[in-house]
Image (cartoon, rainbow, N blue to C red; front, side, top):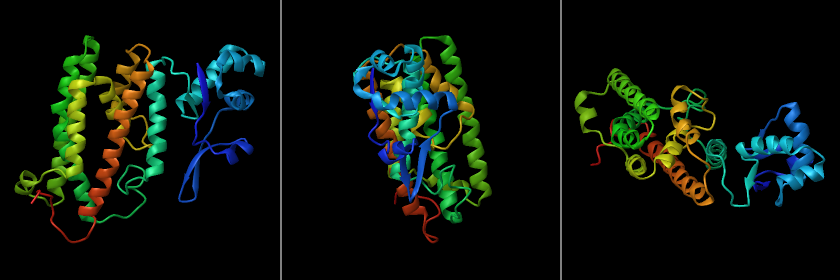
Length: 292
């Protein structure tokens, strides 16, 4: 495998022996490594030029191939390194790489004021908060339409059970969101009349299509694309990692397909955040979006 430093790694950070991946509003974010990884990383990073193989890097750095492979894998998973050789990649390793890429992309595009990281630190209007919950209700209500197809496509019974269990969780989540919305003052009639914003409809359609056409890209979108970069490894993340763990190595074309469909998902979520704040952000306006 041939690896190179990603274009977003800041050269001024490297001069300070820091892995700075970018900045938002003057605040930089960086990758931190444990002492053992850092010691090896600084011995090999300047050799990761996209032309040398890992064996070549190990020879020049006078390190074992196993040690170079270990640190290269960690840096690749954290999107410090990108592959240039177009070779097959372990699917679960690629999933972790995608998680890091999505986090970098969202930080660059900007997060929603109602993302898990921001919702507890920034004041939002009651109308915007209710609108966010209402859009979450629409998303949860549509889950069965695409998840059932993914469950049916699984060859292993274990995966059918694992992914099928998520349907029960989403059903409970849907009922919980409805209780919260009614408690916030919306009526049953308003909930019946409400429809998703156009960007939410586009996101739901993207997931429905992937659910029937591309189960692995669907898992990437559900496990990575719909989550904030600072959101921890909570309850249902395992079910979206497992399809990758069960998959064989991914070819370059498979990697490109999954990455592009995940990028589409991420762009749709950010478009939805913008439309959400545009419609529900003002203090005055309809309590629900009805498409009229």
